[in-house]
Amino acid sequence: MGRWEPNARERLAEAALQLYAEQGYERTTVAQIARQAGLTERTFFRHYADKREVLFAGSPLQDLFVTAVAEAPAAAPLPDVLGAGLDAAAAMFAGRHAYALRRQAVVAAHAELRERELIKLAALAAALAGALRGRGEPEPTATLAAEAAVAVFKVGFERWITAADETDMVPLLRELLDELGRITART
Amino acid sequence: MGRWEPNARERLAEAALQLYAEQGYERTTVAQIARQAGLTERTFFRHYADKREVLFAGSPLQDLFVTAVAEAPAAAPLPDVLGAGLDAAAAMFAGRHAYALRRQAVVAAHAELRERELIKLAALAAALAGALRGRGEPEPTATLAAEAAVAVFKVGFERWITAADETDMVPLLRELLDELGRITART
Image (cartoon, rainbow over all chains, first blue to last red; front, side, top):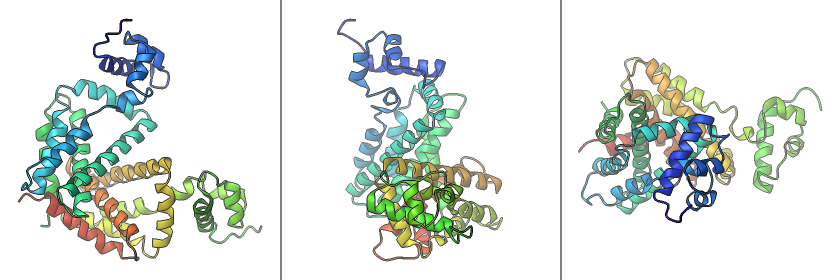
């Protein structure tokens, strides 16, 4: 094994997902993942703490989402600020439908992985609320807006991933944000 | 120990919470909880599967919330339907601030209990979406509205529980529902 390991991180993630799908998450070992990727266990542990982390670590979702919210124009109305964050989150999934679908199948089949996914979403909401407070939004507006954005992302991701064909997640999330406005609008 | 055990369920919950607060959740055993409540372990296990369940089992929150949504007038606009559900959820906390505050302190201090809380909220959202579909709401409206209602409940509960004085949760949740409408409304 040479020291030059191009895309080791991605190769390990791909190998792990393949093995989880083929033989189950529980029965897959780190040694098997490393072998399948043509890498060593040592290399695996340079990139991931354990086999669960392969599915969760290093996603730039929260950073992209939060940064876009923080950096939206100061004068932008709140729905546009949330929309900018949702756009950035959705854009990172472009071309990743097949991978996301396989990952989701593994997560959905294991209670401990579903729990971890919920915790990641709760952390995302907390980070978004912080970014909104940083923009000068008062409470409870900041926290409520953050929860609303995460709700839109959650519902949109679910629809995107279960769609038969790969669709663009960006307009999908924008439509859901508008729909949330209609749902909660006083008639 | 007689066979007549009035309020055994409540006495066990109260004893458990007291011990969790005093000596920690991990260090508390079912035997200690039963003794503190003046009951037997056998009685404990007639009411709860384990010491974690004391904090989660038997809350009527989901039933009350979902039933109120399902039974709101057929012609009611969607925000009013969600409002009816939130009213029912909030009403059950009347007079329970001190208990809820102590329970929350235990949950907040333990990752596994926080995860369990997130799972309960996800189950609540799924049940609400089902009730809304039962009222004829299409998707993604039903799921999005359910997530929005849970977001309002979550933020409102947090505010209610951290308030210095016991306040009425009903108007608090209604205000947050209105605020969510303002947040997501196009300007």
